[in-house]
Amino acid sequence: MKALRIRTLVGLFVVAGVLSWAGAKLWDSLGTLPGVPVAAPIVLALIAAVLAATALSLRSRLRAQRERRPGAKGVDPLLAARAVVFGQASALVAALVAGMYGGVCAFLLMYQMDSDPRRDQAIYAGVAVIAGVAVCAAAIFLERVCRLPEDEDDNRTGTVGGRA
Image 1: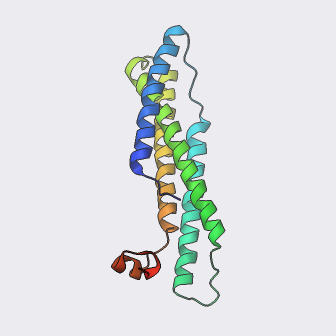
Image 2: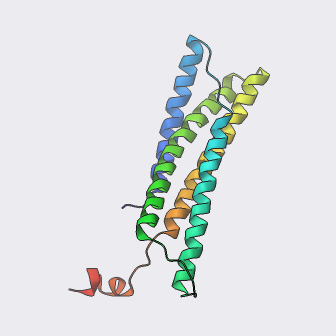
Image 3: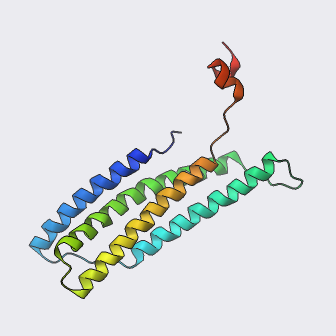
């Protein structure tokens, strides 16, 4: 499994933001732009909280296992792999969603700040972007927690398993 790259997440965010901004501008010229749901930042923040809680739980369990504390619960490798996959999928989707709301927020800030409801929509979209970034940060943290330590022999010989 490949690690998440911040460059990929930023690229998805930028592309989604530009397309969303252009789509919002086109949609507004043809009719009324739909509103940003209040639940968008709440759902993203909940996903970020779940990812962060999972990462902290796994980190403490792995630390207890490494230190060989009595009664320490081990971490099932399949559970850790599933957590990482959930984190990666969440980060990719959150980058797209945050880019989409970022584009809408930019459009609203540039063209639609004359009415109170549109100002509220811009705030909801901005908070959704922040929550999307929090999801990406929590997913990267979870991935770092679940990363396997490198074997010292592999670093010295440059071969797999220390064999030539």
